[in-house]
Image (cartoon, rainbow, N blue to C red):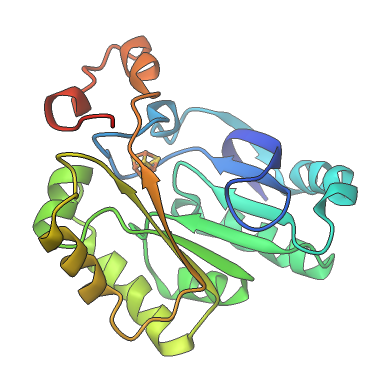
Length: 221
Ligand code: SF4
């Protein structure tokens, strides 16, 4: 199967355990105000690749994976191309390559649930703790899909890391913390990572002719 890919990074050490190949899918339905990869939004952008070409790259990096590493499917939003993602996860499983799925939680379906179940690790990025904040930050009405992801983790106790970008003016109040904790009630993630907001995406927004709106709302520490 063929799908659209933004880029592939080797020896990634930030998106999951060990050293990993990070496959960034092209296309994202969300429009996060602080997105540092707005060039990954357009579903017609990036390059078309077939699954075998990606598997060949993963095999080449395999000596670096060790006991912990593997592949992380990120984006963009990998779950927005579920057929392609599902095939890659299946191929990796057959070859014993550890799979992590890095998702915003903005997409959900029975097919995505099966893919999530098949992955070794879920990296769930919780954009905001309330529907209102989520919709404001992402300009997208998909908080209900995030709730499906959280129900899935609650129900299955699937291996997961929870991640959230935190920033001044974004979600730095006690109330924000309580809202996040409420969402995580009944979930036992292996890790909760708070990632500091940064403005490294500014240049890409400008190159795309977009106003870097984050400047109006958030501050870098
Ligand atoms: S989910 Fe990720 S890629 Fe999509 S807009 Fe938000 S930060 Fe950007």
